[in-house]
Image 1 (cartoon, one colour):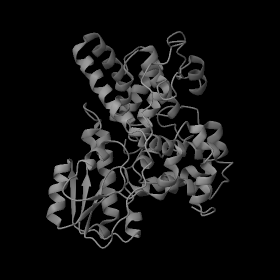
Image 2 (cartoon, rainbow, N blue to C red):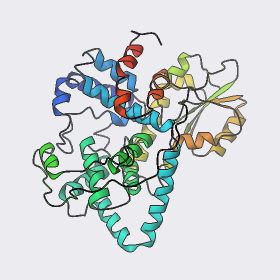
Image 3 (cartoon, helix red, strand yellow):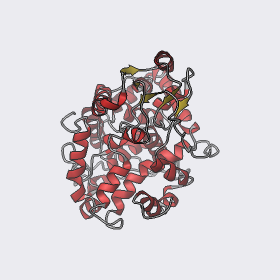
Length: 401
């Protein structure tokens, strides 16, 4: 696992540098092919680092666009912005995350009370369904913490429509094992496959498509649901305004709270932040009511250690591994600070903890990249996609903000 994704900023930069020469023509032609574990060099495999902002979206886009025009690298650039789009969409509709969590608890209760469902769920998680491609992907996920994006779509479709398991349990299986597991991208992608996100339009895995893009490794003829109906669900909740973030009052004594959603805090120090002390939040236990993959916990812990080591001269006294709002309250009070500064945590486990802090005001600055992009995630991706040239132009200083 660590060999595939070494948990460090240095390793992330090396992986980015190795990918850039392939980010245009090669990526466009080869990106849909899933060639199996150890053979994913046709895609960037940067997602575990971008998800934790060891590398930011802007870092990756700037590296690619130094070598290629936007039109040449369009497919890869769009993939980066899908992550941004999902986050923005969920920030304006956070109740969808709450609905997923409630649905997961209901489904887990059913697993514990219905022996047939439990057996089917366990077989799917262990990769023992008899559908070779699905079973392979289940084992690859647990063993490596990664799946090709196309495999994720096929897997989710088979889970929902062929195995007829609750989609929330499948989304949870991914979050518990993916190194790049992200509340927005994961939840909304599973909803999209199910037909809940673009309501009435589902994604159906086809044996011919799987055979083509696995280059014949798998061909599940006559094993998959052929024409399933989309799942029914409630309409989307009303859209809220996109967050704008807080400004830091540098005249007030501050402490810094780091979390897994932004492990590149240099932008805060560039604004003049000089914390009296720093603490790290470990929200891993809030990912799921079930057991998290040990590799996920270890990866997040190692990335946090790498972050605090890289920025040690700017952090002040360091307290690690806080897990609750109460622990953060007690730590912050003891420092004599007047405010807690923490990078804006998008909807998910870290944000849930941060929202519970009561001891001091919590200042949540938002990166410019998010502040500009998220408000455009009002409808489907294709409407958002039309804004990408403008967002790239602002990022590169080509257009006024």
